[in-house]
Length: 123
Image (cartoon, one colour):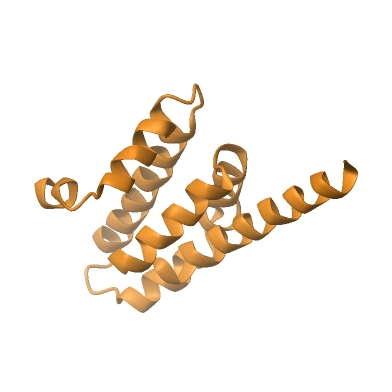
């Protein structure tokens, strides 16, 4: 944990402060998603100690967490800038499960861009 915290850049810290000061539940929602992810992975490993990472990815890709919860939480609470920042961090850290997180975040980012363009056209 200490190494992870030490690896945060000034941009990371600034974005975290903005999220914490924003009067939203985004931080809680994202922590809940992360906790839920690790609980599922831990349970899969407990039930089948020899399960491969690929098998975990397949199971996770079909879960409600990936199919619904991540998209809803990110859509409800993340600004386009924060989505872009999360995408950058995921790419840098090469998270074990990035094969399903990145598509969900890209979809949210694309949706935010469309909403922004729609607002521009409406004015």
